[in-house]
Length: 201
Image (tube, rainbow, N blue to C red; front, side, top):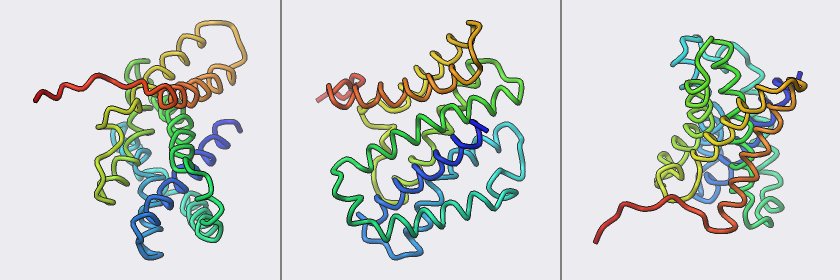
């Protein structure tokens, strides 16, 4: 139940972030839907292909497409209100990576992968949809800039496996990992914490 809820929330969060980017680029309705769709399912598609879970999730479960269509319509209708929040794109993107990291980790565990591979899979699940979104919208993907992005997914995954070693309710490590990812990224942006650049003049 918790897994399904998080999966739905992650899909919605990433779809909204895709809509906001597409609307900033002044794309038409079809373009907005395509960007929202690839943002929401891009990471999950890569994950499923890597672990051999084919056909990939959204091809066998039409619920994903329905959720994305409803989210796109909702976002377009209430676009004016969404844009009142100056950092709405950042917020939805951050929520999305927190949720999707844990989804990817769970998929890795179900496939019998080692924890480090599960964390890598969770990071790809969280980040790859945003990479596709930014490339299609002619932007340098956030993951390749100095801003902390994939790093918080790795840290959140590590915290998840650390808490998993203790005798606690199975939902606690899951929820804690999500909260840690979201909070860490918010703090990193607020205090301008970034990875060092290797650029030389």
